[in-house]
Length: 308
Image 1 (cartoon, one colour):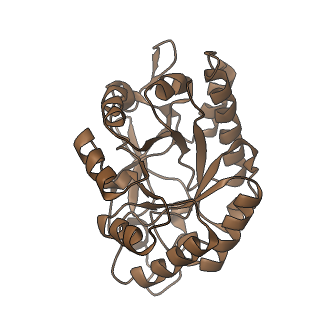
Image 2 (image 1 turned 180 degrees about the horizontal axis):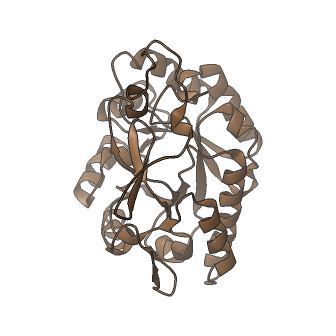
């Protein structure tokens, strides 16, 4: 690999962050973009964000803050307070999924790097170029792109690009929580945090995980055997989608991917035992088919072996 690749993970709340071993990571995305009601969500706690930034910087790690995938007018005052607190704490980057939020960040916090997240749906080099002109410091192209399509977008972009390489990936979003709507709880009652539990929709071998406001892939997306190829396509960062994972799982995932990155830098394949470890950590197995233009539920290994 020609350059160092950043490995980052997504951590939703202080309880998880302070239990995670940061040694294998280069950066952390703070906050949970699917729902502000998620227990301890950094996106509602300015003081917690400030503490988290200090902790990450003390460990020589970069601190980023994501934002909600779908933002309502009533949410904005609280989010603005958190964004300003993050900027004052020296956050290394803010991630926007909404063009209005992005423009506010560039106007009000021009000294902070702004990342364009996956929910902005960057599918081609023209849309990537548009975000670059608007001032994006990093772009996360749509995870639905194949490897070849991704390379076109990255090659036509003058800013860093990032790719999710592991975890359940979002397939769609909703304005209201479907899990909460289908329970006897009234909107005024505290959320029962059902999204932290595994809820699956399954039919004829197909499965999706519901987290209330979003449907995620039923299997964990996994590109651990293809990091060398991804790096050759010009990517600057790899993301572990760990919003709903506990500290123990994040530690295991980050350790495997750190080792895989080191092996990829020397052209060495990741060990099969590590792939099986990741398969064991996944609730419903691994997938990566759409990266190769195949059935999305398939898992394609380094030897081009397709395993369902």
